Image (cartoon, rainbow, N blue to C red; front, top):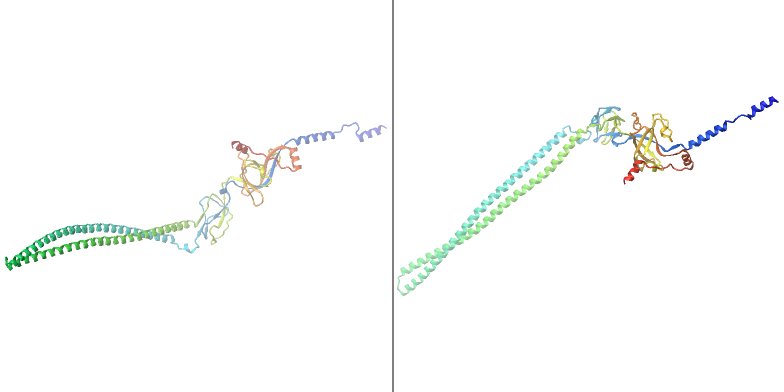
Length: 437
């Protein structure tokens, strides 16, 4: 019987305390306590390393003019500085094959400028000719005006002489008439009558001569007036002709100046084109992905011959966010990164407990959707956080965690079970902007 009681006690443990319930209670209490731990809501996405500024990204080294490669000064992987020569080209267009093209264009420019100088001198000479003609016209006009004045005085004198002659003729005519009456009465001789008749004829001849002199003086005055008008007309025609030649010369000067400007432009283009035979590096960087190889290859204008990656750059990460999540991110929001090639242990809900993550800050959110149907955002390094690795390279992958609102674990479980979106919050920067407005 004693043996049976011992076996019964060993099998059923009737008098022993059960520890399983205590462990289960402790685990249940711990689980309930974990439900009240803080959990950081987040959005996870992927992206690539890029640069914050456009001029710091990889860019193509292009040629402005077409040509044939005659020499390479670098090879892929070389580090170049701004202004270093990458390759040398030679001309392929027939319009620029003349080796003395620049010199000949300069000669044409000099000849055209000399032609303009000659036309300017011709214009000056014609202006001097007009001045001389004006001076000669003034002298000629003065002479003829003096002659006209003299002729008018002569007309007055001839008029006075004619009046005197007419008076003498009238007196002589009366004397002859009285003498004839006396002769008819027999009081005077025939000789005396003939003497009076002779005197009358003399006064009549003098009167006619004075009339002719007056007529000639008036005719001379008319001729002098016509000569004055003719001289003025002649000199005006000469001056108009000289003025017309001046206008023609000025037209040639204006045309020549246009040709000079065109030749100067052409000369400058040729000179600048000669400098474009050497393709130079636009900035400091590394030469990668040479598009052309060998010597003698023909390249077109605007064609890329290689790419250059700047050595100095401000790294950033481009991310692509789903349209559903785009209202949950804003400028100034914190982002955590895990870069490819750098080991990390991530607890998305407890970012402070994660290891190997790096901080960032959103600086730009594009308003247009990308070809992949998502919205692109740019994130720069957070200077207050751990610095990003110096070994980063453009194009390296990055996994991003956008940190949202801190909530209890039970709330996050409840939200996920019901399919609710994460809670939205605004950064302090946005709050301060609204207050300032």
